[in-house]
Length: 359
Image 1 (cartoon, rainbow, N blue to C red):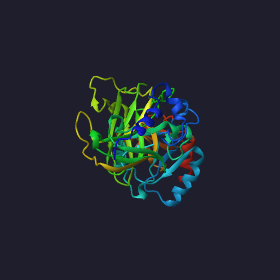
Image 2 (cartoon, helix red, strand yellow):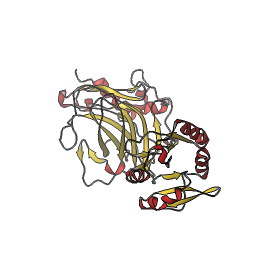
Image 3 (cartoon, one colour):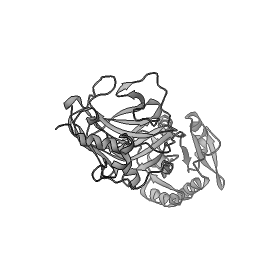
Image 4 (cartoon, rainbow, N blue to C red):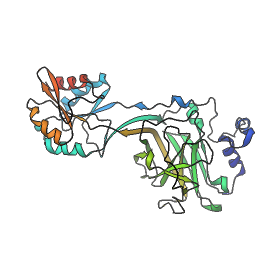
């Protein structure tokens, strides 16, 4: 492989850093780095987090009860799951205790719920269904800008595909894809971090955001490991992203400002930070597919619904665990435990539907 000046020119044109001729040259055949013609600019105001359907967790329930409840709450924008969440509770504002007959013990279940992290997540971009304006934002930015020979491509294959060949020849060793600046900048100030749903190849990649429009402005980074051919969730807190400039950390930099995000970037590099090597780096072919980009924030502990007739006996247990429960009371229900009111996310109609199914 040899250094390719045409590839460098295409990079400079795509990111509009080739001076006043960038926009005109970009319209020439073969000059679009991403291979997708820019038909219209993306309005960043259209990137609004789309709330996911809420989950109602029904552990240990019989199939018939699960199906009946799923049908009952479908019109309320809820779905039902009986699967045990692996680590955290994501978009699960309601947990239904099916009773001792299901083989569950109430105390251990409350302890488990009290210890689990809870998150509210929303989808920002579904890369499996990109629109032309979104696709045209992305382009390759490799070590050719400094004389290297690595070469990456942006492909749209079951998501945003970042792949190619990375080489350490000519003092290089990184490949990346980056967006042009978003105008206006993306405002994610109401969220705590991003969520990538990605499938990699076992290498360690970097997720990079910038809160300034300058081409060489501070890059806020977070490294993440992948597993070959396995879909993973990468949750990145904004406050834990490391301010860097050309892979050197900037300790006195202010934290990333999520209320004004100008660009996004994915990178594979032989370096971590401050001269340290990426322990998982392997030169040669690589590939990372990102299916979606979402956002998250910490959510409240879920409401525990107890349809059983003697559920009032569990109020003190709920309070001790810092949880709130809902029990039957006459023809309606009462809220007991840590709070005396439902979460804003949990509408009374959902509780009524649960009690109706359990009879």
